[in-house]
Image (cartoon, rainbow, N blue to C red):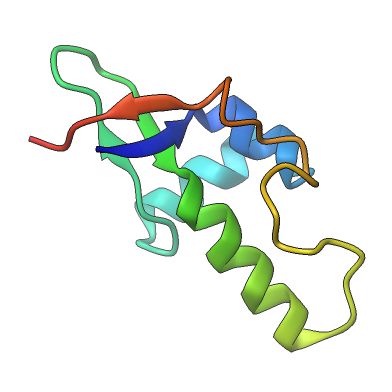
Length: 83
């Protein structure tokens, strides 16, 4: 099982709008997990690390890639089992 966060939590952590995050999911730029029985999705915490790693390669960044540093705490992440 992997840890996952909501679109809102992801958007807040990376200073993005929820609309931008949803577009990224639709374009296939961001992996997401559909929550069984619901219409919502969750984003694996590993996606935060991946995107921050790409940003660091593109230029200097204050973020370390550590989810704790950017406000994604394991206590707020949800355990999600993909179908």
